[in-house]
Image (tube, rainbow, N blue to C red; front, side, top):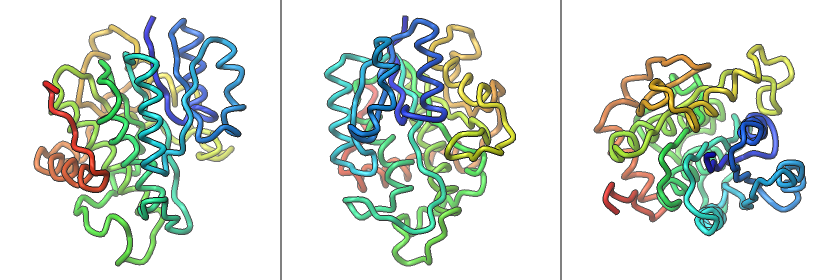
Length: 259
C-alpha cells in the first residue's frame, strides 16, 4: 500500500486519480481549495482518505497545505494535479502574481520544497507547454498585455521543466511530467475528445507501479507513452535558471539532495 497526495482532487482528473488509487487499496490524501469545496470529497474521506485544505493561489495557504501534509507523515508519492486554465484576466493572487502562475507553477514548487521528500513526484502538464516561452521575461505580466493562453502555455513549460530539474537534482526521487490529454472535465469541457480513464491512469501507474518503465525519472508521458519534451525543458541551464527564479519569487530555496 502506497501513501499518495493528490492536489486539486475535488473534481475532474484529480478526483478520478484519487478514486482509482483508493480502489486499488492505497492510502490517499485529497486536497480541497477551501472547506466548502471539501464537501465534494466526503465520499472519499468516508473511504479512509485524509483531507488537507488550502487555496494554492496563496503562497501562505500553500505553505499551510505543506504543513498539514507533513503532519500526516511522509508521502510515498505526490501527484501535482491542481491547476487553472487560460484566464480572461490576469487575476493577481495575494502576493500579486497572476493566478495561473501561482497555482500552476509556484504552488507545485513550494509543495515540492516544503513537503517531506517522497519517492515519486508526478507533475501534470499539457501538450500546450510546447508553445511556452522559455525567456522567463515578465513572468508577472506587468509589462506585456495579458494573454491568457500564452500564460497557460508558459506555466506548463515551467512545470515540465521543474519536473526534469527535480529528476536531475534529486537522483533518489522519480520525477516525471504527464500530459493527461484533452479530457472531458470541467476544465477540458464536455466535448473534449480524449478518454477520461486514459487521462488519469498514467499518473496512477507512475505513482504506484514497480514496473521497470514506471521506475524512470525525468520523462514526459502521455497515455502511458514516453514522449519527447522540448529542448528548453531538458536544458540544465534553463532548469537551474527557472529554479533560481522560483526560489526568488517564493523566498524558498529548493533543498539539496542531502538536506
